[in-house]
Image (cartoon, each protein chain N blue to C red):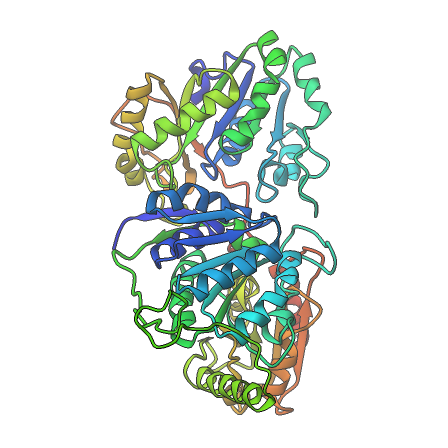
Length: 354
Length: 232
């Protein structure tokens, strides 16, 4: 292990990508994630990589498509309105089965919204955004160290499944600083990319990357193949953290920065004698439904409380997983505001009947 | 008193530094330390970073009788690199002292260049905050490079360093020793003095003194918080 260094979330994403072998970055600046690009502008030349400020987010995601089709490890990053612009590209990347890493440092919306943190892009991230039947793997880190490790992992997952991996952060995670320890060597998975468009290379026919098939049966076969892959990902890649649920009467469900705030609230509630635990989805798709169902089946658990920086999005997936076994309450803040530990504690007291 | 040295002799202290070097915490704490003696201004002139800036401490500054000057856009939902016109109050008020918290990197420091006529008419010093536990200032060579870029943007020489070794909860008085070789080598290469050492009060033993050089130490209080910090 190397020594500790103090880094911003946005900086660590860029550093992690370079360490993971990403040598192509295409982006367009937008607060609160522009530091990623700023860092890349300094760092990429040191490793003979390419950083390019595209003319728009649409151009950047299509550059990602191109580089991924040629077999490169490639990344683009943006924030909410910019990610909306990239949705068509997401769908094309899904159809062409290209490995790519995209980071969304979410800001408040809808519309132009504002630069302050939010989690209002949960639906867009986990349920589509673009057209057609496709899925992105969605990772939700909650600390700067995790942001580093998950960015490296995102490149491995993307290559392993030939799939887009979306890292869903928020303005706070992007802007806050925490100490990070880097590994001496990154666990980079080498996969064969014999499908990449790299010229004939002695093959009978040249490789093709496309998402258009004019024969409906072939188009359906591609869709079936995609669905089979998504089931495989659901089987293998669900990640979550379960915190103090053994004796919990109230279980918080929260991801990313909201889960960080809840950690302290759990400690405070327990000091008052209210037994609170937490399930923190680390992958938002595939969603840890089974784990939540298992916790909901426990006799000790009386209620769930989902905490999000939105009007209630993940809470729908929590309710589906709980499946009526227990009541699922919701607490959210919007507009760039974060729930304070004090107001969350009051909500918990109310649920506990204190 | 730590400010008995010449930091306090000059009325306007301009704080520059690399991104995330601790400029805002140092600026707020310097203003607090000065606040015992006469009228003190803290000017948040960060045109780079919309989050976690010295204007966030408005309530605390008011409590301590420090006059905050900041952009009307600080802490809002827009990212407008605006310079508050009210900054001219600082230059007009000749009996007061002021700390100017400047945005990160050479981009942020351009504002110093643009204020140069007003600064030169007053008496000012430029201090660069360095945290050798941050990327891009973790070697003496990189600190030198960063200092030169800042001087070019400020159109002025840097008068001194504020040595701010910080790893948040992993900070300690040992960390001050650990980063010292890097900091002092950069200072020697540039022939710029280290004028102040800063450390969060909670991370240094009450009786701790720095043994490697005779430089004043400012024990700081935490003034800028993250939503996940351990407090309600």
